[in-house]
Image (cartoon, rainbow, N blue to C red; front, side):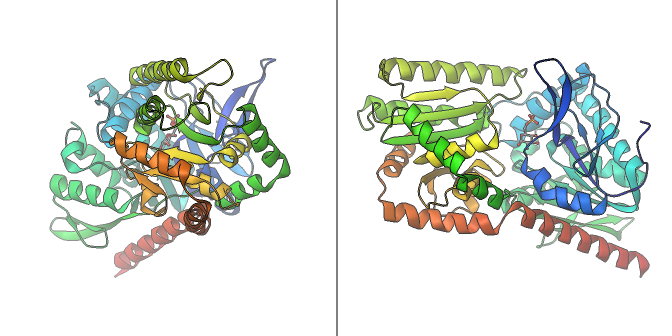
Amino acid sequence: MASEKQGEYDFIVVSNRLPVDRQTSPDGTEYWQASPGGLVTALEPMMQASGGAWVGWPGRPDLEFDPFDHDGMHLVPVSLTAVEVERYYEGFCNDTIWPLYHDVIAPPSYHRVWWDAYVRVNRRFADAAARLAAKDATVWVHDYQLQLVPMMLRESRPDLTIGFFNHIPFPPYGIFSQLPWRRRIIEGLLGADVIGFQRVGDAANFSLAVRRLLGHSVRRAGAIDIEEDGKPFRRVISRAFPISIDSRAFEEVAKRPDVQARARQIREDLGNPKKILLGVDRLDYTKGIQHRLKALGELFAAGELDPEEVSFVQVASPSRERVETYRQLRDEIELTVGRINGDFGSIRHQPVSYLHHGYPRDEMVALYLAADVMLVTALRDGMNLVAKEYPAVRFDEDGVLVLSEFTGSADELRTALRVNPHDIDGLKAAILEATRMPQADRRRRMRAMRRRVLENDVARWSSSFLDVLREARGNSAARDES
Ligand code: G6P
């Protein structure tokens, strides 16, 4: 840790993953590549201006790296052993909290050794941030992997201003209360000055859990008053801050002639179908990929959609492949795709193009431009950024978004075709409506979505969170002095 500048950073981001991935080139040399997440785009200017540091895991087990500088940011890798990856990341994060917070779509597993690893790894992240932070610095902790970090940090560094943002849903109390360590999680989160959620409903679920488990009073604006010895001690703000994307950056890519040429090429390569339908997801059981395949299969079978005239492109990027539920899901999806193509395909044309890959942003934008209908049928999703990327890209004001009401995006994108993905008949009707919608209607709906996404971009999201954080800290400093 020779190059680490301890205690000098005024702004620190803590997230499970660093904003860079460790890549290996064909000749075996290794290098860091920026991962194209929206969070980095939103925070990079602030990190560069305020001399910020980012604490995170480099994404592979048993690798120790010294801190290093990348694009004007100081990156501090936290290493995890193979056993910790298994128990903390694959286990507690992605086989306990992830299914629990997504409405138990898959059954969560509860294992005490996983919980122990979660506590230990959260402590490691908290210690790294505590070492880096200057006096009175601001630390912004992200997501469900690190819910204990706020309180751990507050205990070791009470001078810090601490924010937490939960990128995934926060479940209703009836579900959350299954968790054997439910009280510890709430206490951990309450170490923050401001706790952000995607939707108003998530913040309300959290408030109820706080009241039920700890008995704190929660005021209307999400202000939680924590008392000590019967006297007011601290106020925590919990509120919705719906996240967004770097909309202008997506739009700019879409306006490039090479990307538009690629979109035309995609249509041609698919055999110039009348309609291209598109799904873009991490391969995850929360995304409702099977539901949309079922609806499409039935539409083909009933002759309501002509498989010769339609191409459905499903990009399913590989994710959490060592977790059993994800393996099973992959098998199920691939079986279904094979059946549909077997039943309705011909030598000339396969109605489903299934791609188990991740693609760079330019290729994704070209796909969005080529798609007449975008299918977002998640069973539960904190926000779903694909639903925002599609309208951001469609500067031609064309294309139809079919959007599940169980995504955070549905709160904002009111002119999408709204669906309940569990209702297969409703989903089929929406897909048909989308493929037949007149152009004037498509334009009206797309315009309204674009206005929203271009105005509420990720920079606005981060600045509104950080403004509330600054204010919250200002208020408690004023209280401390009085
Ligand atoms: C969701 C979570 C993120 C996570 C991402 C990818 O969007 O909110 O915290 O990084 O999925 O999952 P992974 O397990 O690969 O980090």
